[in-house]
Image 1 (cartoon, rainbow, N blue to C red):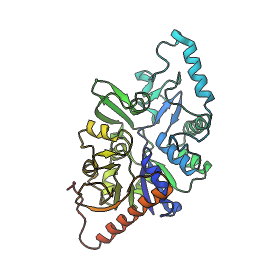
Image 2 (tube, rainbow, N blue to C red; image 1 turned 90 degrees about the horizontal axis):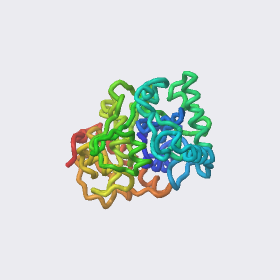
Image 3 (tube, one colour; image 1 turned 180 degrees about the vertical axis):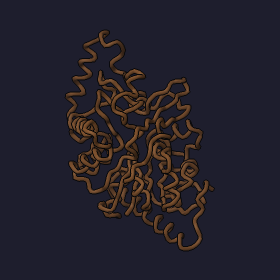
Image 4 (cartoon, helix red, strand yellow; image 1 turned 90 degrees about the vertical axis):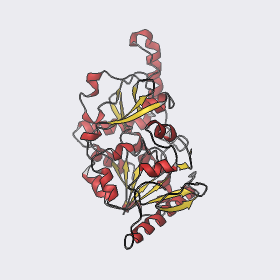
Length: 350
């Protein structure tokens, strides 16, 4: 058995190759839910759905978001209606429209602190994609947990791996900006294109949330952290009580999303700097004191006082993903071998 911690696009890309290394039937994927939003009453789980659609063979691999070839008639009509309504809707229909403070904590608990109006939709949601969100939300309204709803959708997409949301409780990733605003991560990343500058990141609700029993069982197995964003992909998981402790008690290998101080893609550098961490592989190692081993790019000059496997860590296709997954496999084998003798240092980076 092996467990992957997934957020963003880095780990889902790695999963393409992992299926050639580990039996998918013996693979669990714990997905970040801090990025989730409720738009127009429907719960959207971006990191869960990237794994869902990739495993189901329908992911749009140009954008790594949504379903390949999906139409957007509903989204376009929502935008048209908002524009045509003009002043009657009170505000700019092209920007994120938060529901008021009272609505943020009313009704469906899993959507707390991340409720947006469906007027003008700031995230483009395809028609088939929307059917997934309607189904998920309907199952939640029937009393199912997010874990149960996710497993139902995984069955519908014929997933081979066990896909698990990190928690059945609400955790919202909020960005505190240097301008003094507090905005949801999706507004920061999708609507504002990673602006303005980040002053801090909050995982609201994490102190009262819990990993599910299924997640706890998955964390008892060897863990692979793919090249995901340490702050907003892994941060919400690590903020859950007991999550990091579980990682300290099992073999863990992490793939750096950096080559030295150059990030492959996404806002990881700005976010790490915003929370006071060095935006580099060394910063990733410091953020993951529980990791026993790392997979680094051959060109990465970073020295880490833990086991290191080196390979070309760029992932553009399934063959690339398999190469990185093989390096993860070697790292886990080395860590498990070390357990019989001297233990590998687990604190800090050299």
